[in-house]
Amino acid sequence: MPPTLTRPLVTPVVESRPDARHWAVPAPAPAAAAAQPALDLRPAGDPLVVLTGPDAAAAVPAGLPDARAWSVALAVALLEVLAGRRPCAQLGRWLEADVLTALAGRLPRRRAGAPAPVPGLRSVRVQHPAAGVAEVAVHGRLGERPVPLALRLEARQARWLVTALEVGPLR
Image 1: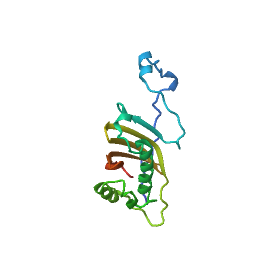
Image 2: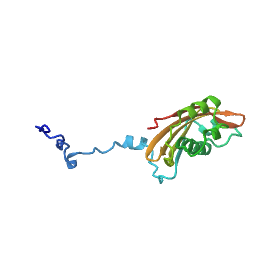
Image 3: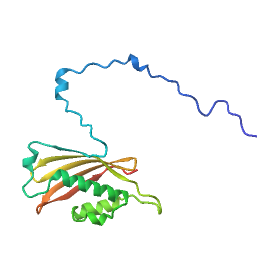
Image 4: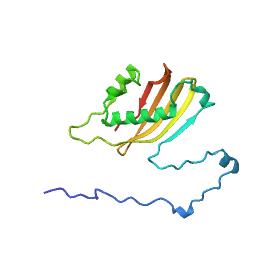
């Protein structure tokens, strides 16, 4: 005979939030509104690329490809590698050897027959902290999971080379 429970296993949660009509939103101060940058509402499929830094155009040596366009293409390739849709060795030309080795060791294991998640690019932000250096922050997605990436690009022989790569948690 099973024991009888004296209290239910699941108890309902009592709603404790106040009604929304009681919340007052203060009007923004005029000075704060002028300092706030405009919000860019592009479609989700169009990656938002922002170039920041003091005199960023002058920080890029002549003869190098555009850091913004190059970073978007590299971010897509990195997300495809993380999704298992592209071999890691294909990035060997653009990543330093130790960065490529670290990336290959970080790839998630896929079950046989499991579909690879669809990679997606949400935003790319490029900053030039010094001449010949670009730091890139990427917000990507693998299926429904967000994947943050951070890259440091350095100018080497008239091309960009990834010298540091940080990959956020892959759950």
